[in-house]
Image (cartoon, rainbow, N blue to C red; front, side, top):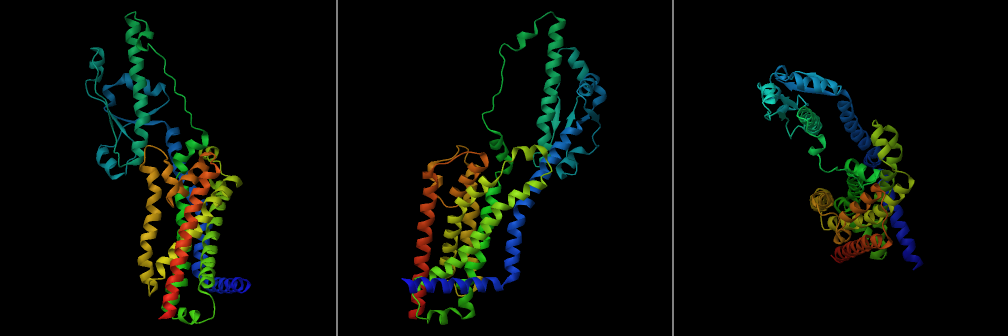
Length: 391
């Protein structure tokens, strides 16, 4: 037992040394994982800040405003600046060169109001133009306010009680906490972290298996009087160490990343501290170990590094697509989500961002799946190495 443990440490030291020799790849992976948090948060905060600045400008573009002086008066009383849109605003909206919805007023607007008719006012936007689409709802609420004001004035002129318009009072009460509302914007963070862990393990796993076979250094290694399991565990330990290091750096990169948030609203909503970083690691470390074993199992069958890269595409594709189940599943979380690798990790990390607690059972299920996946991968690698040694 002592000799096997010493052999594992020897192989582990050798693989880590080989990984450290490729400094360019290692530095690129480490720097990208450290910069992951700040870069993602900067991108999100820049988007939120741009939307907030647009809302603070309080500008509205109206076509045919000369035919609607009452509407202009209402908009200006709401402290909005009314502007004329470009002549070709429809074409510019399609090209995304113009990012504001346009209110189109008919020529008989005032006459229709005088006849107590309902003139049709259009809000022209492009759903493919995200900025114009985001402002369309705000303009719609603004025009709804104008309609309610006109209705109240018409009833008051006829001596009708205004309360008849609203026989009931409706109040909205949002049960979501501040952190839960923030996940509508920051819900993509677990996905980026998992992809960083995946690509951190990918290069090391492929190099220690298919890479050594291509270089011709695997066969001499198998000639050593070392147990196959000690060799496999040592190699897997080195790959898992690199992947876990990426997980640690990625999780903790969001702590200083909060310093660069440009949006005060997002900074108040995004609560990510040491507790959240540690919970991320509880979820990610077993996943990193399982991914390392799985990638080694895929690559050990290949004779060249390029062939291993092509084969590992399946693992990369599944890891990137499975978390999207939460996006397209409108029914919420299901118990089976915790039994699916990548999807389970994304689910638990999203709960962390929401500030929700999860029990021990919800952690043990993904842990059990990761252990089974890692064990199966290591068994397959040991089997392939045994066959290679016999040949």
